[in-house]
Length: 260
Image (cartoon, rainbow, N blue to C red; front, side, top):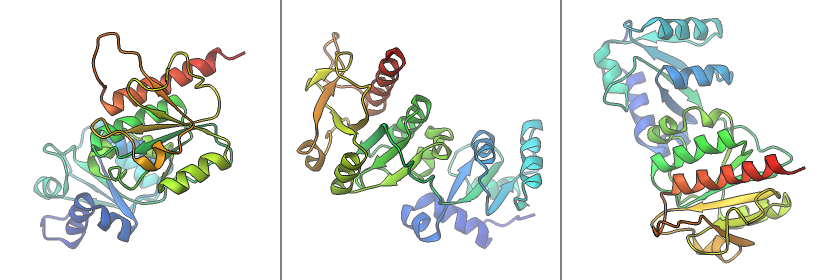
């Protein structure tokens, strides 16, 4: 059992939680909690290490047994050490260190989310969760967007990272990829373009969602194939980026379900 927060493994976990650069250089990231670990296990992710306390409930113990059957190395830690390693105020007693190995981009794409300048981790994680639920095949993120593997993004994503192809791409690469896959690059912008219920979101689509404060960058705004907005009869100027993106993705789902 690890009982010291100064243990090298615990120091590494704290560094991975704290810094995107550390995650990139090590090729590793950290997930916490039973639910996220269950999602990783279901996706056949192979942890480098699973850290856990002895005070897990039945569901937590079943998770550890499943990790053991999958050949994942386990290490018990004291509650104080788990608290030191965790990014949350109330740790659930289990975390896993996973390799940074995103799902490859599918050869055929007709539904892509582009996150541009979405800097709030909670918003990005919620967008990823909605994208996975809506059947989005890939998410392209501009470097100005929050790191997809930051702890808050992972918690808000609720396992979406294991279901989506995630890539960080510059504006030119986004434009080129959309063209190569025959996707219409449609940018969500308050009050601009067609209302979402009249726009054609059933065709092959790369939906661009920018930050609530700044919108999308000029590199995509200039190259977009069109704009789309959400009608707001209540008179609000804009919606939270995660809410707006979710509405638009599920409007696309509705249209696609209604196609003959």
